[in-house]
Image (cartoon, rainbow, N blue to C red; front, side, top):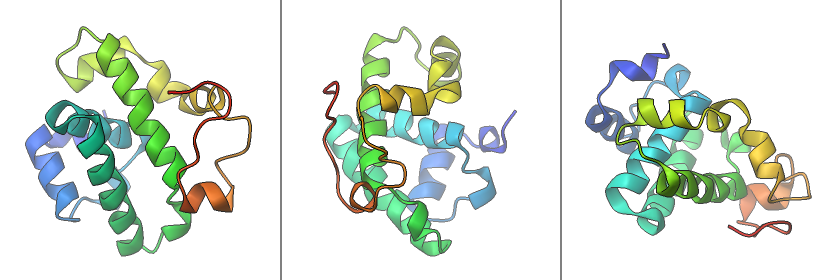
Length: 136
């Protein structure tokens, strides 16, 4: 089990919002959990603003600005929101079990929306690019 599970959703959100979350605990699954917490608590629009700003601040704090990608951040919230709306789960553990492709094949899900390589594109890192294949 990943280390972020040591924290309740409230502790997870608090530590991330105060930029005191342990960087080694912030795995792909932890990214998904943060998006899940924010969307469920604040709705998609507010979640996107919070997620984007706090991820960027986290990247700056740990000198990983080059890893921040505005397009992937935007797409992550859109994708998570879609799956949350389809879900019958009321907690993240059950949610990720219900949709394991989010944890195991997230890049492939992104590639169904974008034909270009948004993972390395300088433009995608700086600005939110809308999908050119399938809209959210």
